[in-house]
Image (cartoon, rainbow, N blue to C red; front, side, top):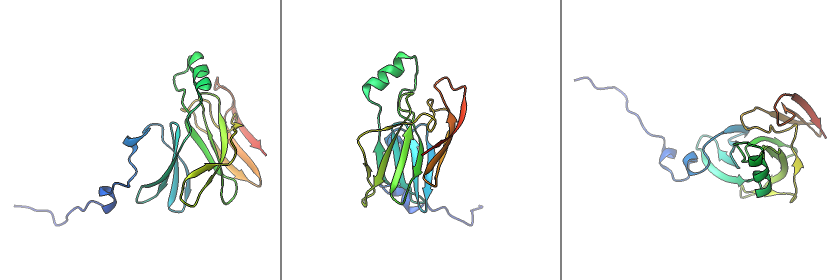
Length: 170
């Protein structure tokens, strides 16, 4: 009887309780936002996952849900995806991140730092208008980079999704 001359070993990290498991949270609309060495940021619906790459260990998460007024306005306009799909994350300096999402078809951005324990901390309790940086619709693409004190972004400029745009923002 034939037998294979190899055997399969399950990687050790797959049996760990610390492994990132998308089924525990919002497991749709994933977008790789940034890679920093062995760390990655993944944007999803209402959340950013900060993971250790290779082991897929979750370091922390950032939850950012739209307020009830924004959600009600979005639903009133007949939209179906009235959550905050995180689509942009840029590093502005060695510790300051600029994170943007669709925010119920009203794109918004915020500044965060990552503390020593890996947790996100908002730097101001307000937000910036994210139009031109994040798309309105989570199914549309956007890309952004921070260079020489400016954000350069490409996405659609309006909720009708008819006008593509490349934006420079100081």
